[in-house]
Length: 296
Length: 296
Ligand SMILES: [Fe+2]
Ligand SMILES: [Fe+2]
Ligand SMILES: [Fe+2]
Ligand SMILES: [Fe+2]
Image (tube, rainbow over all chains, first blue to last red):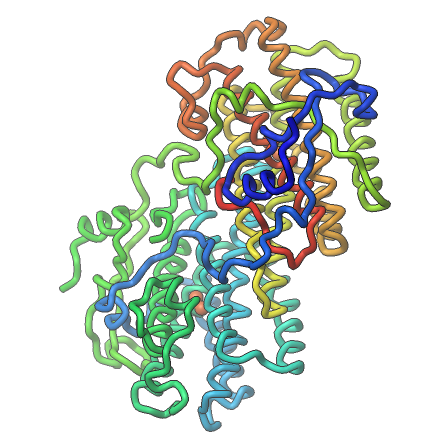
């Protein structure tokens, strides 16, 4: 009755539902405890060795739905700005501007030389931060739905899609080069601060937080537009016509032979999408139904 | 060039990608700010009134992938127990037993009379708690992936699926009857305590936390098995042959005419699935690749 180890491993990894199949009838004594009711049984719980695939699938193979951009869409993203209206908007706008200006100055972006190493460090650092807001928003709304016994109104999936999409941006950038120890320390400290501040801010004012992210994404589109200009005009010679990593091609379904330019154009299109999503969510009421469908 | 309001609303709600389409060229002066690079433009950001659907779609229409159980699977779920091995397992097992016994005593489940109101209160209360662990685990792993610059190894989607699935259990139960104010206060207080404890525990030992959830789910399967017995033997006369709510039929793709019995059988199958998932994740190493595919 009990499936062999090989069968179990195959069933689990083939999306079968093994817990219905690898059960056997046992007496209460055998089980060592009295079951409260119903049929008695015990799984033969599979051991990790049987389950864990020998080789992990590529990064991004399992992903939430996300937009796949056409060539035309990739090339028509524009730097854009939503004018702040009212106190909350201005707070969000000025916070982002203050953060950007001080980060640009201290990181050497404003006056320093831009080269491959600088660009890469900047991108990786920003993407470690960019994945935070979506997850925090999703968590707060999920817990709120549970404790208030009310539906979420469809926001959570969009926030989770954004969080995962930003994590993919990070994973793709890490294919190029892994940063050093000092950088890693900086990323950890920054997250420690940002997570806590954003979490508290989201409890206090989701409207502020989504506007804040909307303005952050305006800046992200600017930055990636500058990067695309730099690549196109040969200012980062290492990246001219360089083929995109495989995980980027698979994730965005880029054509074979896609380049770094195409990959960063896809990232920029994602940021433009987050910009629209967050500005829209900020303008909505918390109980309004989210108009964005999965993957769009 | 600018789309009409009706067009914009349609585009957004049809999963179009409106931010590429509703842009217009503007001078820097018009925009009120100098863009850093690239084409200049401004969206006509749609107003919430144009976007938010007049009528919200039904609960659960947008959901993460989740197993759809066959009749045979629904009826073959068994009460089961994984014997604790080692210190962490025993801590998890004894914590769950202590929680269950004291909850059963104080809630009147052990000695009190079971009727519709008692059952419903118990289910709703437990499901407000059940949605917490998956979201906490997903959040911790997501943030860890970002700050450590390492891939997640495919755990997050399974944890999010569990969290959403538990939230659906709650939404389905709330279709039957909405609890009163005192109950709501209890749910809020309980979440406040449980979220913080589980979050800290997950930082300290994911192995403990998944084992803990595995044992919680063993109890959930017992409870729902008792409930199914009570329904089948007519001890909850209001629920005998009562038709399942529409959102339950849609979510689990139950046949038309499905009853409360079928709906709670689907919930029990979900819990049995969480039981296997969490016992398996607990037995794995954090860097092992998650063998569970989306929706399975
Ligand atoms: Fe990003
Ligand atoms: Fe972004
Ligand atoms: Fe549940
Ligand atoms: Fe569960």
